Length: 292
Image 1: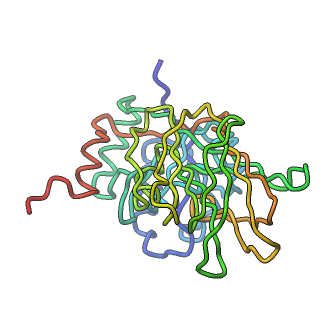
Image 2 (image 1 turned 45 degrees about the vertical axis):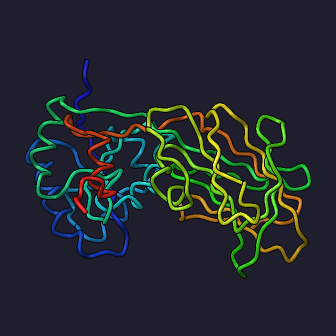
Image 3 (image 1 turned 180 degrees about the vertical axis):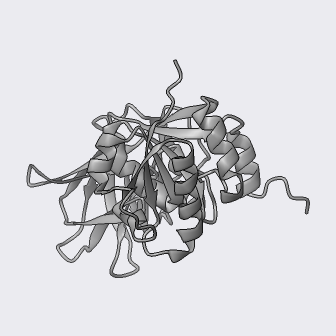
């Protein structure tokens, strides 16, 4: 039986007052439809009323069966990472520039939500990455990413040296500005700018994309999402390398650190309107349909 979402958690882009009108209209629409609404602390900054409770992100995840994100793809990435372990479905109202993940515009919000609440929607399972940083044999940090993880320098424009192994077998020794490890979702983001392929979200694959490699024969490579990717960082203590996840969180790396990246056990439940078409989104966002 199709799930009809009853308790809705609202998450918004922080620090952006331009979302207030859309967020207010969304809350009023949900209340009129008899849905229970709870606000994340980010959304509560723009809509305050005693009748709508405010919860922290993890508490919100435990009580709602759908999270609606008002913002852009960056807000969707942040929400996705924080909600994936709770198995909460996520839907995006797009107020950003691209809208690969948040694909409902404010103008069509009421109509599309009506269809979704009637059971007419599509649900995708999106892969995330999970990384562990190993230093002197101990795991010192863990993090996840919906789009990508990037190992790079941060203090100076110099190359980084990395050894990459797949399932215990050496792939290559890389000297480059960095290395992108991307999910299919992230293949239209930084990885695409680095010359990587666009991967259909339904494929069980990951892509490794070198950033400005010293050896030009170092090219992007697609591997199974069942692979265990291990990256060894070379250099001295002034290496100043770091790993950045979804362009939003980072952790400093030292020479000798090993980064082990695998597919996260949990997948993200991403909700789309019934007429969602991934290829149409690509044509629109990448301007493939435009005449010269």
